[in-house]
Structure formats: structure tokens, C-alpha cells
Image 1 (spheres, rainbow, N blue to C red):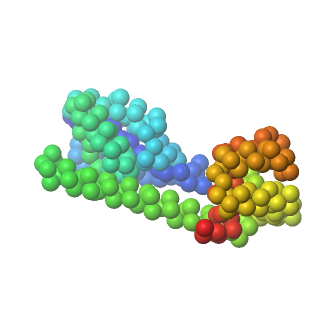
Image 2 (image 1 turned 30 degrees about the vertical axis):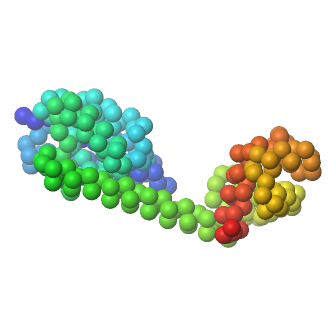
Image 3 (image 1 turned 120 degrees about the vertical axis):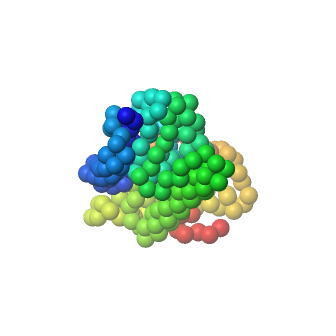
Length: 233
């Protein structure tokens, strides 16, 4: 009798606590195991973790449970990884255990050159899709910020939460003046470290917490202000 270790994962999302994605994946895997007459010997799940993230406790727990002749069963291969290199590391770990990976949908069996190539192509497509989703999300957030909509717990430098609508941002005059000074020096050709030093030397504009200006803070302000204002420079 072949033992199957089921692994399920879903990516970060707003309704992570109430998502039933893993339960659905588990149900499909259990039906697949039943059809193949496998014995389900374990179930491991990672919630709200990216397929490109190697730090997934349940994934490595599933690998540790594998034995010679057992199967790591997933609904789709991209549940294991959305990164070609990470996928290859997982496959090597499974192979070292004397086990194999099996997917309910989209599986490509065999170790021929063609099979390996197809699996790598599928992994590459999954990785590409993840990057496209990330770009779309980033673009949408930038659009919201340009419209003055609050997108995080803390407002970026130069803005504060609107007391009349906590979903919106309004400018902070003193911080906006500091931003103008920073951009003026940037336009003059100063590097971010030089800008930080001059800001500290001039003592005309303060950081939000009153500390000294630092290069990373200048970089962040330039990046945030560019996104919020839609500056294409």
C-alpha cells in the first residue's frame, strides 16, 4: 500500500483566516488518493504563504514525513512552488527520500528529458504569473495612492491620515516642504547620502520621529513621493 502525504497551500489574501482553499485542495487530493488506492498518512498546510517563499513550516514537515515509496500529493504543482529553482530543490529533497511527487491536476509523470522540460516550463509559467500578479497589485496600490487613498497602517512621509475619513490621506505642510527640498537637491545631482548630510547640516526640516536624516529614509521618501504624485522622472 502506497502512503500519500498531502500538502496544501494558498497565497496571502485579505480573507486568509476564513479561506477554505486548503480544505478544497485536500478534498481533491483525498479523492485522488482513494482512486489510486493510496493511504493518506498525513496532511500539512501552509496558510497565506507565497509559493516563492522557502520558509514554509508545513511544506518541510511534509517532506520530513516522506518515506521510501511514498507520494507527496498536491492539487497542482504550483502549490509546492512558483519558482523554478525552489521547485528543483523540493524535487531533489523528495527524490532523496525515495519518494515521488504527484499532482491531481497538471501533473507530468516520468523522468525523460521531455517530461523534465515540460515540468520546468510549467514552473516557469507559474513564476511568471506570480510576478505579473505582483506587478498588477503594485500598480493598483500606486493608483490608489495617487488618488490620496490610504494603503497602509502608517501614512508615508509628507502625509497624514484624514481625521474625517481614515481611508484617505492629506498633506502635512512642513513635511511637504522637506520633500520639496529633497527633490530640489536630487535635481541638482546630489546622491541620497549627500542629501541626508545636507538635511542634517541645514537643520531646517525634521524627520517624523525627530531623528537624524539617513540615506535609506531619503530613498524611501523619493520613492513614495514619486509613486503618489505619479512622477515619471
